[in-house]
Image (cartoon, rainbow, N blue to C red; front, top):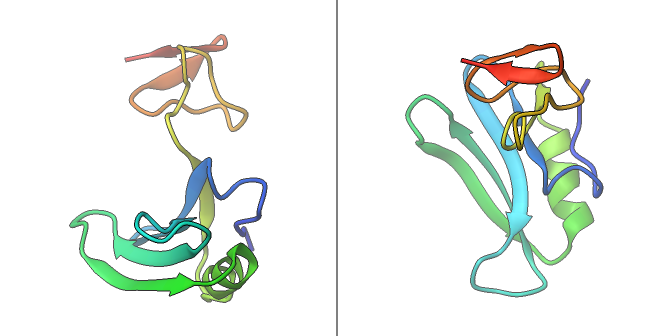
Amino acid sequence: MTSLSSENYTKGFLVDEDLMAGVTAHPEQPGTYVAFVLHHSTGEYLGYQPFPDLQSALQVINKIPRSWSYERFGGCGGGNCGTNGSCDKGNCKSGKCSP
């Protein structure tokens, strides 16, 4: 099962065919974190919970029993393919993104 870690949570989300899950710094309370789950097609939140530390937030998300895959933000970033060989809005060919 794919999971979020303290190294990758700021660079992407966990996704499956219906949902997206992640962890982010709380926008109004420095030093705290928010775990969230939403329908990626509608943007509707299914869950949003603040935690006093990063590990607690990551643990809650990683316990959700789904067939997650990790999706990195920004696709290719600068036109180069990411480590997973995919682009945000195109295909990865010869190390470059194409529409």
